Structure formats: C-alpha cells, structure tokens
Length: 243
Image (cartoon, rainbow, N blue to C red; front, side, top):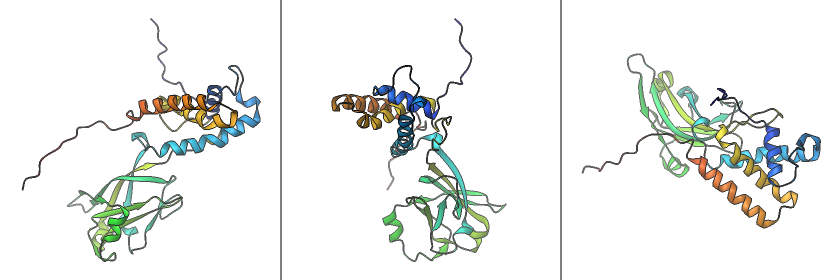
C-alpha cells in the first residue's frame, strides 16, 4: 500500500465559508462561493464573530504564550496597561493569565517563585495598595480592548532592579483577513468550526428550525469530541493535609 508521505493538507478562509454554505444547502456542490459576492461578503462578516465566540469556550495549549514582565513597570498603584501598543506591548489581547512566576535575576540567586493569581474581589480586599516589598500576587483584568495588570505588594527598589514576572497567558485567535488566510488552530478543529459557521449562517438562509436543531446537535457533538485534544497531559495528585 502506498501512502502520500505528506502532511500538508490545509484550508483557507474561503474554503471554510464555502463548506459552511454547503452544509445548509445555500451553495451547490460544484459552485464556488467567489462567484456570488453577496454570499462571500456574508460569510466574511460571520467568520470572525464565530471564531471569537469559540474562544469563550477556553483556549487550549497551542494558544498559550509565555510573557516576561519587568517589575520596573509597577512603580505606582495605577494598573499597567496590557495589549497592542500599551505599556506591556503585545500584538494580541490577552484573554486569561493561567500561571505566574516571580523571578529574581540576581546572578547569585536566579530563583523562580510561583505567584498567586487573584480575582477582583480578593485583590480589592488587599490593604495598602501602595505598600512595597516582594510581589506575591498578580491581578489581571482582560478588559474590552486593553487589559491591565496589578501586583501586590508593589516592587521595592531591589525587585525593580532584579525582579520580573513570567506569565503564561491565553491569547486570542488570529483573525481571518485575506481569502488565503489559514485557521489559527489545529487541523483537527476544522470540521467543528465549519459546522459552527454553518449554524451561525443558517437562519439567514431559510433553514427550518428542525434542521437548525440537527445542525446544532452535530456542531455540539464535534466540539465536544475535540475539546479534550488541546489540554495538557499530566498527573493529578491529592495529598491529605497534616495537622
């Protein structure tokens, strides 16, 4: 038996739109979406909102990024802005901070100490926001367009000189802009995304409610199948507390 020996199959933005329209019977089997500019424009308008809605289900491993944040940014209780063209500049919006570590870069130390990621209420309950010392906690607010970061306590002179945070964050998906753009997610997610896009388009093209229900069931089943694909492998340990 001969195999191809290749692993280069891919789809583009227009391929996804085309296949989604076929799922709802709005495009013939041999009809290209590019011949109908109205349908193509509807698909272009829908594809990025669908992409963003799926991000709300959580971002798996391939969308996790490690960032280094110098403590020299944190000189007052004013939050440090976080995102495109901000004080902490990233090309993407950070959706969630999942892990934080404080590092002392003094040549004789070079220590990595985990920091606690606090929710809003716990951060606001901390006393004396202007207190300085060794940062123990970090609070991230993703915001609508620009996120912010706070640490507590604020870094003292030694931490400003020698300290920094390492953050592991979930970034947003890259947009579909051009017709030839490929998805910013693994190929295993392609079919689930096509069904999600088809379900989004279905009401505009007269698909009966019963058929939309079946389409939704197919979409949900496909998403459930792939949700475990992008999670990290590892063991989970439980140990009793000794009093």
